[in-house]
Length: 145
View 1 (cartoon, rainbow, N blue to C red):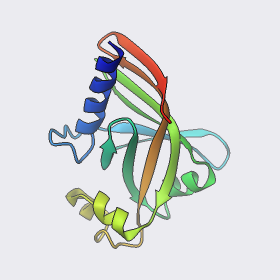
View 2: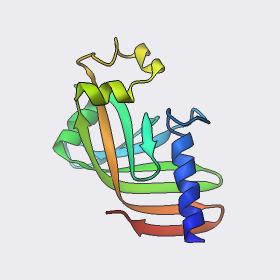
View 3: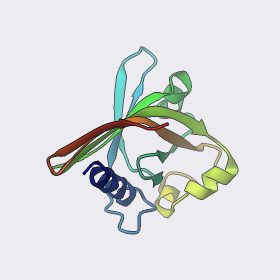
View 4: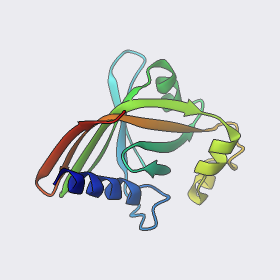
């Protein structure tokens, strides 16, 4: 039963990330700690994911998200719909590597950036430490290494 819940969570996260073959164009929430120590939440689309292990997001290097991550790397991500709620808690980092930026680039980012080499474009990489999954009336709590 637990493996079934975990497998469903991995599928949900992957199809709600841009790289997903069945991408649904849905969003998740990303919560970060602001400069005054309060939680803030943004709604955005993950660029890529490895199930619940890690997710990446595109953002601006000089924007609030990148600044908040630099100040405090603790964060959480939530995917929710009527039939599921996937809560992930972990750590996040700002990545400016050209190789990673090219790898995480997708076409609709051109509405915000001139290309993967744009100096204002960066990638946030979230790595899950623990999770709480509710899927189809079943639940599972666990930790990842």
